[in-house]
Amino acid sequence: MPDRDFVHNRRAFHDYHILESLEAGLVLTGTETKSIRDGHANVREAYIRSEDGELWLQNSHISHYSHGNIYNHDPLRPRKLLVHKQQLAHLIGKSHEPGITIVPLRLYDRKGKIKLEIGVARGKRQYDKREAIAERDAKREMDRAIKQARAAV
Image 1: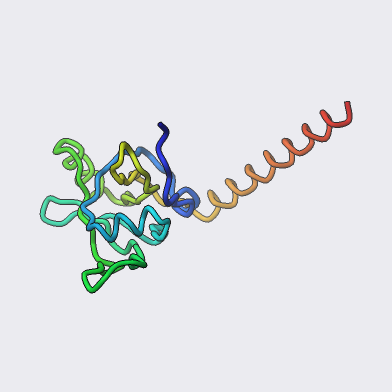
Image 2: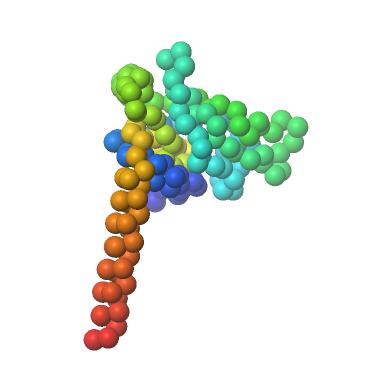
């Protein structure tokens, strides 16, 4: 059974060069899990910080669960990430390098558990972004021309 994507952070791929990516677990409450499964989550402006030897997902928005009660969660609370010790040491070391940041890439379901794909990234310059847009437009034009040529035959 393939993984089900709940949220995909396309903004991260536009703003950053993704150097490497890995999977992390999340510490969530029940209402957060249900809200994510309903598709009410946003990680577009979220980022990952290291504090006291732990990784935390900051500024991610998971909306209140519609059928929740007075024990519903805070939508913007920091959420702890669960990774292996070696990965944790590697990520903390990378995050202290200049120009390197750790960003969330997507939220998805793996065997009934909600996982977060995180990426070690370096920011793109403005000309890199323009270059990527030009390449995407050129590819789209080529695909369109090939499709028209096949239709004409």
